[in-house]
Amino acid sequence: MVENDDVARQARQFHEETPHAVSVSVTLSTHTRGVLSEIRDELNDRAGEPILNTNDVVRLALEGASRYHERAPASDDDVHALTAAVRDALDETGAD
Image (cartoon, rainbow, N blue to C red):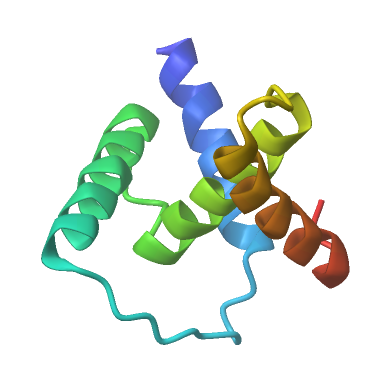
């Protein structure tokens, strides 16, 4: 299926761009861990193969938050302030 091929290509590229030499220890609640696992499994199912790991999903979430910041309405101050912090951190690390 063409859609699966496209998802697999994008997932593989995203996974390969994540440095595997860098490992971060994060404490997650059971609920958060379950949600991340469900997202990872859904993305891997759509790709048709197990490509992404939980670290990839966390990175996707952070990048999503930073992109939300670019489009978030300025009136949503709480969310905008939080996503601004994510965006600033990604800018400092040189992430795309």
